[in-house]
Length: 118
Length: 242
Image (tube, rainbow over all chains, first blue to last red; front, side):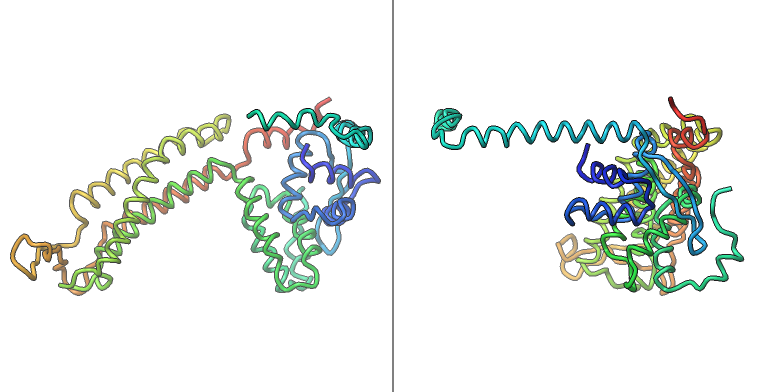
């Protein structure tokens, strides 16, 4: 799962949102790193809807235009949780090792000999 | 049924210049897509551009890219194909029409070099794209009710135009009368082809081929103006996948 997709799904955790609210929430959650353009957002929503991870929840008329809100489906919430667990596991691999290696000088660094051989 | 607001209601609310520009950008998407989505996308785009006079460049680029994606690879290839044909015949038209090529005066070398380079590039492009265009179109239209046969027909028309282009461009040397003129001794490098047509010669062949390619492009655009099969299936079946 790519990062923008992850944050789009995460933005829907607190309930359904409409297009611009998703853009804002995504930017907020990612600390300003991910600023979705309108076109990018709808391409992602098309794909996520087709995959069944997101669904159209309600449609209302605001300023004479349709405003649609999207929400997470149960498979969408599942995929998001699985991705979060995978990333936590991957992060643990590094953060855990950094902590245990601190103090041991050559430690895992025995591998550092490898480039010398090559 | 789709929320495409009635014209009366649209007319009542004042359209700002920003909204006009946003609507223009949304035209990057095909009509079938806009019918369903234009309203909410306009809403989002307007909110994202609030306080601005123009939508941001990022938004504009993303919309154009999104529009290309929605139209599909087949549309993209077909437009490149027809576009190359139009440009090729346009060059043919310009290089053999007075007053673009003044009577009795040869074209400046740089201009004629540019024209022949454009001709070669676009000619090769249309040649190389023929099969991919046909395959991509067939693939996209494969379960459509109409279009598969018309698609092959349109491709065949394009191929016929390419043959005509080759004949006109390379065999006849376009339809402008030319003669060899030498400023130095005969057969020296100073010799060049000079157009000898009257002051108002128009290359009708170039113009006709150009128009024919335009027609091929419009026809292909029309044939592909339906959602791709997978999307169509997803839209028409309201029963959700378990």
